[in-house]
Image (cartoon, rainbow, N blue to C red; front, side, top):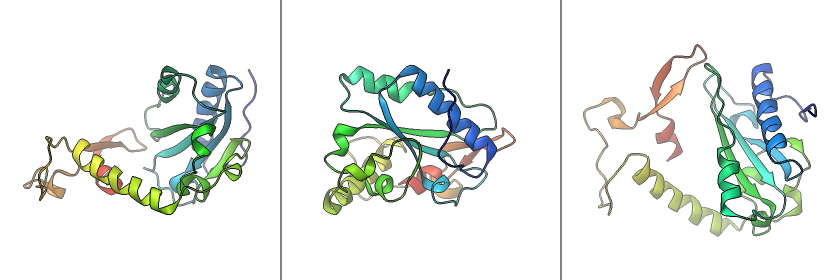
Amino acid sequence: MKEILLQGTLGYAQIDSIVKEVVQVYEDTFPGEIAAYYVEGSYADHTSLATSDIDLVIVFRHAFAHRETRTMAERTWTSEPKGAPEVDLTVVDEESLRAGVHPTLKLGSRLIYGQDVCDLYPLVPIEAWARERMHAAYWLLVTIYQRSTPVHLPLTLPSPLEEFYGYTNRTLQLPDGQEVFCTRNLIRT
């Protein structure tokens, strides 16, 4: 088994250890198929909190040959020890990056393992990025809060009588292992 050496620390031994474990699992499962691993979000910009999740982007070489390969890649990481931060994985292939790299990946991430391939591809046009983000917000508002479709405006609050009006439908694991409801989904939307 090849020793995984990250290209710099994420600032916390526990986080570095988790990321190394993810990289090891993917390198063992998909040998020679992955070009790069990037961290985005709070661990990339050094604003993480004890409850921050670890946002990882795994860039596969070339294009996914089959939809099943992509699905397998998305489901390969399943281990999250009690009290450890959640790992939020995104898998992408280099072929899709040719059409444009998302700004969060190209401009706001840190390479942690592999070769930096983001510089090989253009930034996605801002119009396309804005359109995608707007539609993602619609999808999130409908899907995360289990609204029935078709959706009619104006949207009602998920639970008008609850604290945060029902927008605390996701749990978060604290460092001590305790699960609490949080507003992470509201912030995502």
